[in-house]
Length: 321
Image 1 (cartoon, one colour):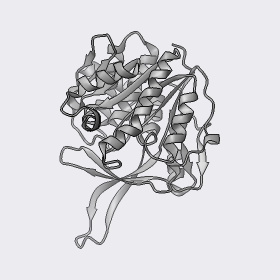
Image 2 (cartoon, one colour):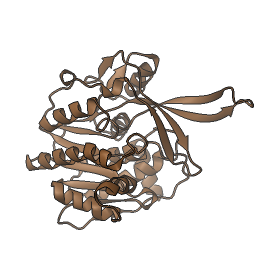
Image 3 (cartoon, one colour):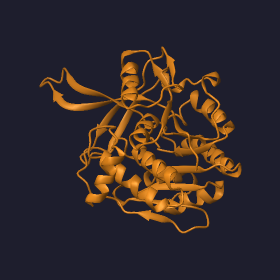
Image 4 (cartoon, helix red, strand yellow):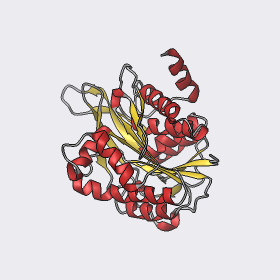
């Protein structure tokens, strides 16, 4: 598989994480403004896994946008395709439950990430691998622009569904926004390119409320892979690992890892990068790629926020198990 670079397209934003410092009268509190965003984190994680990664996103010229740009540059992610804009940086206020699971309140109106215009998007090469997903594929007006553009590209494509119910509460509405991407993935395969879709069991359970209630998540996901003609589907199962499914083939499974959880931020984004990097090196060995992905994901949840591991750290983690 000849891939010159991974182009990760979508949002870069600021996560506001509570530090636990609050005045007695609740007049003020302290938050940590951390660099985040699914496609941005995947680009960084791919670079740390030894791949050439380019970030295709809209970065604000404001102070928080400069932080995001500096973070990407510090991780050696190529920003040649990134768009500079005066629109403000998107923000997400993060809440963590007692188990470290993250939920988000988003502040997106008129912000940089979701105002794509067609002329800002490049033509990609057949040796590029385009990755996208998460918020960028559902938030308008940019989502429709990205969909039209991605459908025209002649290269491999992966999409991380990464559902955020707090953003679009109606499952049927969310499904209507995501289903066209499944159709594009199927069409990409019919044109001779690789197509990969990733979701969590929680993602599928939420969406299945609109299309297949009371069904097992893995069964529903496998049906989607078959129906839309997608090459490969990756279903993450939290601490229980992950499964890779292909129409007409036996599923491939990887166990999860028991670790000391700090938070779940960027677990899926890092999983995706780990899988793509390993799959690129050895496309015949899905089991190995899945094992790398689950190890990378397990490592990132032991850290605060979106701080993906390096390839060396993933290899050492796997040796220690």
